[in-house]
Length: 143
Image 1 (spheres, rainbow, N blue to C red):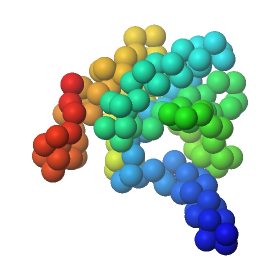
Image 2: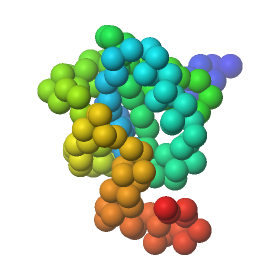
Image 3: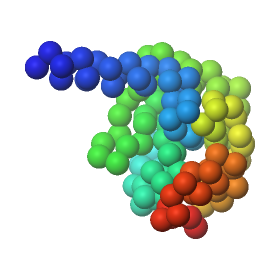
Image 4: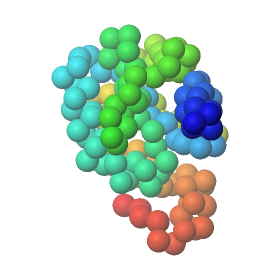
């Protein structure tokens, strides 16, 4: 039981800050105006989950002052530190969806009013690290 508690604590701490995703996941950050719009993002992410997972993409959406990680099973509120990291970036880039690469740098800015995951997938697939991922696994799906 102690090991399970340590693993559980470790999983929480692994996502305590935005930098903790570096070299593990690409990250999409966005803010929306209402819970109704958040619900649309949730449905969109669920529909695209296979492609998100294939590209190691994690999606965070801010509504009001809360930040949610759109997850396959259940959307989750983020930790206080992670929320602060995300809010800081989003406050600097209003009405924009940010794509953060595996190296932790901002790779692309997308206008919120004209956003599509398909464009993100296309941009990610052009990245050298993604090409290396595909090269190492010829069965990996690309669109």
